[in-house]
Length: 226
Image (cartoon, rainbow, N blue to C red):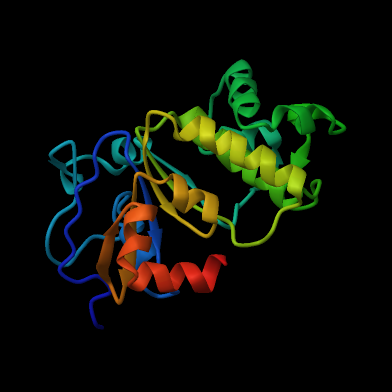
């Protein structure tokens, strides 16, 4: 098939917050999926700290990258096991500390069995905001140097929204973050916005710079956010 990304060159600085915006199918998800090697580029290379991602083990690579997806998958198991995603052995105190940072601890201890409450198939149903906070707690526990955040498009109630946003602010601090952005507040705060169009970076700059240019981002902003 045709290439999804074309002639794309991007240097992200340590600690930089980069927001990706653009229409559906513009290449935003494809771009961030190259980092953890969900697939490899057919040409070119992806480097982290100067090292090609293909030259390190998948396990060590994915240990550096935390992902907070739009749709959070919970598997059958306890809340604690879901936060310690993929770790056979884990320290419950570390899981609780991660949940506190993620603003999840309070709702967890109010569940019938607390951290041992069963979720997933035949388990308790968690709200969208609660699932988001479980995903953030997973990323906190991983303690990655790079964070990929695919913002939920579905609306959360205002209380959940505030708790999720506060938790995200905490976890984004001092990390390099790629955000597939759907919220105005996110794009405004980003160090850099990349406007993706047909697999290319069509525009790059801060919110103010791109609005002043009055081109693609300004049009996108008017359609999406006003």
